[in-house]
Length: 415
Image (tube, rainbow, N blue to C red):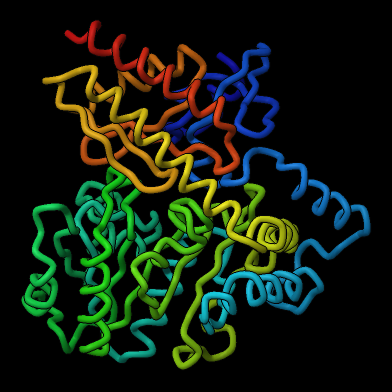
């Protein structure tokens, strides 16, 4: 037994799915110590939108470290912090007509959600928060309270209160039901501080909300003084095409949670964007030692400047997404009667299967062929594809070919 096997906690998960020791990573590829190359369509659960060790971001990082740039500064002002804020305003917020203020809540997506929930209750004076079935927002107590999976919530080991669950949009839902459903919750229309939503549920199974439903939800919230929180932790930073996942719906959330790919390089970082009038914090009312990780600020600013000065990446992501959806539809058509279905927008894609066992066999068969694919959704029944946005068309086609072979293998070996 290796030292890793002896000492690493049983809580680990991905190393069980992919029992390889990785030592190098470039672009869309991970390399094991045995020299084998793996095509990475997991991408750090959506953290590596610009690929592993992106050369543009690496150069900015190495230059900053080489010049003895400040690494850790809590919320003190630094050149790195100022550079990030300027890049966000000039390349992201101003061009979209957004006037958000920026909260640095801590280094992880759950920190961004915790800050959003605290601020929503603080700013409105209300306590209830509505969330959706199959939602995933993090594993800290506040974030757990608005997760849609009861088993995940139970991992808290204590009561999680002042939350109400609503059904998420699907093709059978009536967009007119949103207001009535919210009114029927314990918080109702007058006691609910916020609704938190993912425009596409990643961990929940690549469930795509219709744009009309999102617009209706935003209108209901606005009409009743309820704050709309969009969790863009996995689906933001261009994953669906536009920088923010809600842009195509034409809505403007009150609060936006960002993490994962916001640093650009896989470095820990999170932001909570808030409407200026919601900035009612007292100094240090929400803080944390690592909310000022300057190395992440440097790579984030460079990613924004390099990739979001025009719509090139957005258009490329949408084109690759349509191409991949076509490939997935061909796979489904090849196996009629097998309960396969395609889900997704942009480069957040899913192949729904009959059950978790089938999805696991497909993932295992893909791994044996050198492709990393996660599973998600209730019971793990959806094979999830989250390639870097910078993936080449040839690697995208290779992954689709490997997936097709893996589906065939999994269906043949089914007991």
